[in-house]
Length: 474
Image (cartoon, rainbow, N blue to C red; front, side):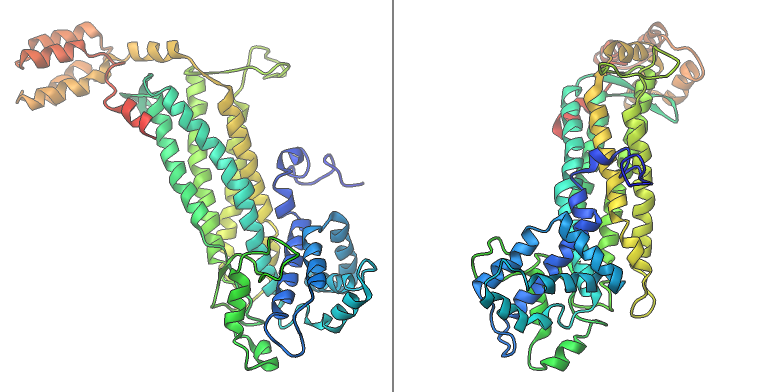
């Protein structure tokens, strides 16, 4: 059976493959290989700039060829590396051998081929596989965060903010413990979500993506054995932190544009990954909360959903328009968080100077982010379908005069009326409360006339505090 979208085991590469095309270049096996090639080439070029007698600076033509390998890396290149791996049974060594093979390209001049052949043993020089892998993972996450995760979240946040402003003035009955409570506005409830998402969005964006290139156990042992006079820690930091080359035809310094991790065992500690994945999971949890709330509002009739031409809600009940986008988002957010939580709990743990349990787990970063990205898309689609049903909102408010017990007893307390809370409890608790009953109580109160008239003018729809102002503020 050949692999296709209908034979893939994971729905991310099957049913949902078309929706994740933006993530695939970064988090796929090919994306991982691409980053490994970038790291190996960057380290190799940077070594030529140290001033080593045995490895003089590369010619501009050689640099252009090497950086071109990164820029033009293709599926065919990835498959060639996989073919080498069948022999080596070692994925990083396969990358090293593939790079060395490119030094013999017939597209190069004889002089450049000779130049590269003379220094080819400096490919992967003094590196452990994890020097290449941990930097590649950081590059993958950097791209995925910038190109997929944050834009996906921003799309949801922007839509919610627009809704918060649009519905800032529309009153809505609150429910605490499932029971009627002090009214709010639709916009204010959405604004709550916006503020929470903005905060966690900034946390996701601010996580420093760290990388180390310090050898087999983090002490530069092999580096110093070869050239004890070189400050390898400073060199490693320079390679990690210098921004990537933007042009291949200049002799500018090359680097990876990451944050330097000076202390490690064989592997980078992965604490930053835990921080990042926990932040993404927290954003997802907020969206699960909102998914369930908006699902409930649709069930109450507060929101209607615009139909798509030809779309069917139920195979047997023709009338149904189900909240499938929010249900899809909720399900995928849960899947994302299951993997994200495992990543953040497992990755910072490694036996002694390293074990291999992190390797297979790290290959699932794309799975976690894939489910999250899918959920953000579903959420945005669902939000775009919503239409507010103000009649349903008003009907619930008109049937909930009991919520005015709170302002009445609070005003009574202000003016020293004894037993204010208890009086309102006797009138409202467990009873069907009407405007007439409340107005009768208000007229009997020993309070200033101005306060009495203010209470008499109050309705469930007008008793929203500063909800409208708060909604417009986000």
